[in-house]
Length: 340
Image (cartoon, rainbow, N blue to C red; front, side, top):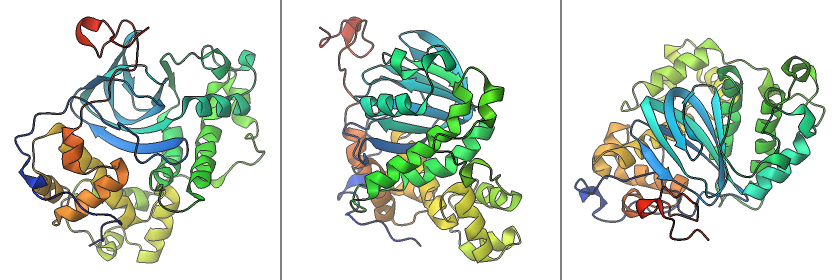
């Protein structure tokens, strides 16, 4: 069994929260996992979220499933391969139909704007409405495609495993990986995709992550573990199931999913554990067992590493508050109490 990361587990008595009221939305109140200007989190949702707003901007990648999204500009459905960008303070409501898996990058809005101004060509070569020089934080929607997201996911996974307490170079490594995600997305954002697809990346080098496909063995191993999270998996049995040695599986898995098999399993378990904590009234102990952790302290420690709070604290926190918008979806009768 993997040991929990550094830090205490959930507080005493947290397993007795089966009667807690259902949470109303996703909480990253202070973005505790933030490293430098970025935080990257994988989520699975089966129940409505929001309406909710965050101080930071966010870029949402729909990896699988679909969700109806409602914003101040109306309602639309996002499916696998779609992306959404929201500025800080812009509310959104999501209704999975019936399930959606996403990667979300939370980041400082000015960092996002300045980085994209550097990376993108002039407004005349970027798809209408997507250039940062013309963006005022309103919701942006575009289709990048599942193939591109499959290449991006290893980078996003690496970003999500960098903790703020891993040393002074953590922010630099995170921003370097963010630059890779931008490099992958650039061709889909310009006016002439056929021309853009053949042009060099911003730094003149096309990285290996842009061309390596996921092998059938690595995909089979990931599917095997994801479909039975409650099982106490061992690396040797996963490798045997796909007819690879442990070292072969580890090399391929790390290249193609951004983490070694057992670390990937921990991250996926944390994602599902977070969904159960947010969407159900299962106790922390029961939720931990459901995803394969017999020890609630292990589950709570990994949860705290990702969200910065214990599972019980997460349930008790209010949803992110309104930060000023009219009409406001987060205040009574839509009359914003903070809008000027």
